[in-house]
Length: 332
Figure: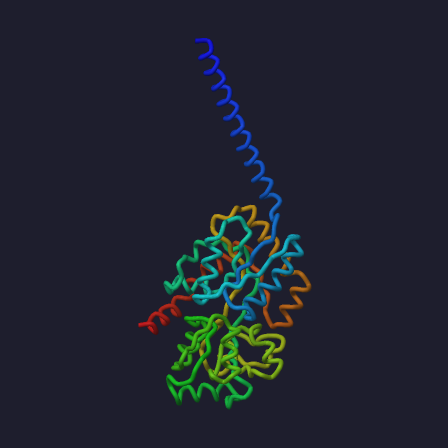
């Protein structure tokens, strides 16, 4: 009987020690988690670019990654994940672990694709950390093209409805649709996975024209391989494209059409991690190396903090409605 009691007591002691150990381990894990969040980041961070290398989003991401590295003291590694006009990369970023170690470059497609039911996610599933850049679209043709002016191109499209080709950086084109609507034009849209691939088609004259962000065609404009004909903005741009007229100047009643580029993370990312990233972006856009790079590439810095970025995205969801409706009609 005594031996049996000893075994029971011993068992209870073991169970007590085990429970105590688990509690200590739990407390230790809790403390460790807290310390890890305070020390964030403790390892390299991945930055997903949902488009091919060489395009405007890729250029902004790589410049931003370098400046963020300086602020955070950890590498920020750019990873290109193409497909679905940006949906593949954005979806991977959304469904990654919500710990701040995988960020997503958020462009205007993060709004348009869900509205068009072309993405397996909703815009609201992301937390928007900060906007970095906002650019209008510039219409370009090959320097070998017969089109010397914007009027030349429009006249030829009108004379040959449904014949001329527009090389789009994504499908649907959030630049091509408002241009076609405002000018009442009919042309063929040929979609690609990013501007870098689309620009090659224009350079090779397999497509008559393209609409891209200034940073995506700056090098080819400076080299004389592309000719800019008009921009989709309320006012003319500064810098290398200051002499390029707006479409409004040419009688086309279209306002700003372009894209934004910022950072987003999964919606359940810890607030303290989001705050660190938000502060880091705010400092990175003031880095002189970043400023100089963006100016050289004709990429326009437009920093917004997390709250303002989210508000801009919500506003853009409403502004995208006529473009979305037009795109759905094209599909039908």
